[in-house]
Every structure is written in C-alpha cells, then in structure tokens.
Length: 125
Image (cartoon, rainbow, N blue to C red; front, side, top):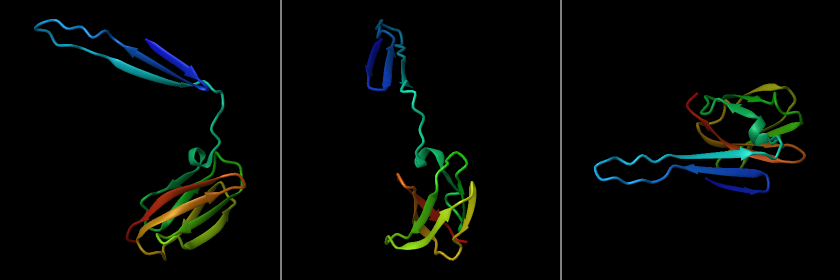
C-alpha cells in the first residue's frame, strides 16, 4: 500500500501482489481512493447551479436552489455576441430562447466573485 498526503487531498493506492505460476491466470486488483479531507465544501457556480435541458429546444431552466448569490446570465452566440442578458432573481428560472437559431451557444453566469461558462446546444424548435 502506498499513501501520499499533501495539502488537502489524500490519495491511497492499494495493490495485490503480482504472482505468476505456470498454467494459472494472474489476478491483479487495483483500487484508488481519493479522499478530500480538507473540510471545505464547494460553493462555486459550477458545482451548485444546474442548467437544463441540454440540448434544448429553446426553453431552458436554471436551478439556483443551492446557490445564494445574485447571478447574471448572458447567452452568447458562436461569434461571442450577447444575444440574451438578465439578472436571475428566482430559485428556479425558465428562460425562453425560442427565437434563436439552432446551434451552439455559451451560457455565462456571473456573480460579484466568479464567472462560470458552459455550452448550450439549441436543437430545432
């Protein structure tokens, strides 16, 4: 067994012996445990905000139920042009983007301290 601890993450590697016998199959087991022992919970937009469905027909929902800051949304087309902008004030917000052409867009969610960007695909509506 090999263990390495550095900073806030512990990685444990377990391995059985590698044994060879003529005429027998070799069984080898490898199991890796990654333990976050930092005690710090994630509070980032990427981990706490859900944007769905994706792909979409032009109507998306944004779930902020586990996030408690004011969030601004921008939807950008493939050229980087802003095609929609709004402040999200409700825990669950439904946004209609049905006038947008099908294709790939970027959703940019911003707070006073961070920015999260994800892709959104709009299929035929």
